[in-house]
Amino acid sequence: MSAKRDYYEVLGVSKDTPASEIKAQYRKLALKFHPDRNKSSESGEHFKEISEAYGVLSDPEKRKVYDQQGHAGVDGRYSNDDIFEGARGDFSDLFGRTGGFDSIFESIFGRNGGSSYGQQRGSDILYETSVTLEDVLHGKKMEINLQKEIQCQICNGSGCKPNTKKNKCTACNGQGQVRKTRTMGYASFVTVETCSACKGQGSIIQTPCSECKGHGRKKGIKKISFDIPPGVDSGDYTVQQEGNEVPSGINGDLIVRIRVQSHPKFKRDGMDIFYDQDVSMIDATLGREITIPTLEGTEKLKVESGSQPNTIIKLKGKGVPHMNSKSRGDQYIRIIVNIPKKLSKHQKSLLDEFEKSYE
Image 1 (tube, rainbow, N blue to C red):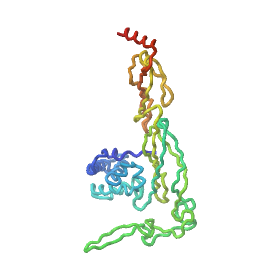
Image 2: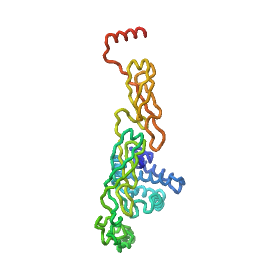
Image 3: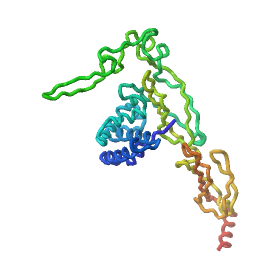
Image 4: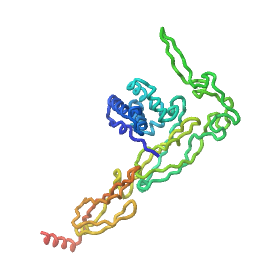
C-alpha cells in the first residue's frame, strides 16, 4: 500500500503558483531526472512522478478537480493517457522529440505504457474507512469484500464462447488503428485513429461468451487484503492493481481514503501526541508522582514541586511512528493546575496563614 505524494509537493510549488511557473519548474525537474541524464536507479520513478504531477497541474480542469477532491478525484476521472498527455507535449517541446518520452514510459509501465498505445486500463475504485489512533500506532490489517469488475471465469477473460476464438479485424488488419490521409491543396495530412470496427482491439469476437456477453469481465465480489501501515495519516493511499479488472489490459487501482478518528484523550500533531493532565494546587506546589495514560498503557510521571500552570513534560518515544520508518514521535503532557472554586472557612484561614508566612 503506497501513498501518493501531493502534486504540489512533488513539483516544489504552492497552490498559488501560476501555470507559467509550474511549467518552468517541471522543465527544470525533467532535465534533472531524465533517465538519459540521471543514471540513478530511482530516476525513472522520479521522472514519472513529476510528469504525472505536471500533467494534472498544467491542465486547468484537472487542477481544479485535484484541488477539490485530491488524488481520488483525478484517478477516478482520467486515464493515465489523459494525465500524461500534457507532460508529453511539453516534454517534446523541451527535448525536441517525443520518442524519448514514450520510450521512458514504456520502460516504467511496461510495454504499451499503461493505457497508451491501445492497451486498456481499468478504472480506479474508491474505498473509504476510518482508523483509530491506536491503529496509527500499530498498523491494521484490512480484509474487505469489494464489488468490482472481475475477469470472467467461463471464458478466462477472452470474451469468447468456450472452444471458440477471436478473428483478426479485417478493417485494420489486426492493428487496432487505421490511418487516414487528407489532402488540402498541395499538402497531405495523415492521422491515426482507433479502428471503429474492433474498437482498437485488433480482433472481433464472432461468438460471445454467454456469461459476460463478450466483455471478458463482469460484476463480482473479490476479497481484498491489504495492510494499513503504522504512522498513517488521513488521506488517500493506493493499493495497486486492485481496482476494476481489464482482461489483457491493466487493472485499475484501489484508492483507500483513510480518516483518522479523533481520540477522547489525546490530540495528534504529526508524530507527536498531546495530553492534558489535571493536578491539584497542592500537588503542583509540593510535587507528586502521578500515573498518566499513553497509547500503550500507563506511565509513571513525576510532577516536580513548584510546577506552574501549563508546564510541559515530555515522554520521549511515546508518540506515533513515522510512516515507513522506525522513528517515533513523543508524548507531551501539559499540567493543568486546578484552583478550587469554593473553600471552607478553615481552608481559607490556612491559606491566609500560609500567605503571611510566605511573605
